[in-house]
Length: 66
Image 1 (cartoon, rainbow, N blue to C red):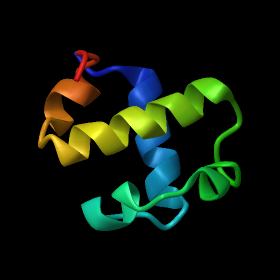
Image 2: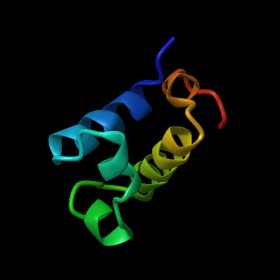
Image 3: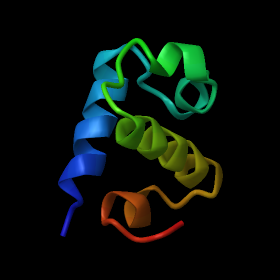
Image 4: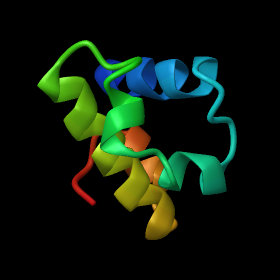
């Protein structure tokens, strides 16, 4: 089952113009403040970055720990 919070954050990231792994990994904290509305969303973007680096995007989206 997909984790809706993580899917929402992924959608925000893509809608903000970061549509590939390289650009998502390169997102800075300053850039996150432009599209994240809470610390929880920032934490999810950081987790997304970790998942991409570890090639574990499916477990991330499923809500599993990375």
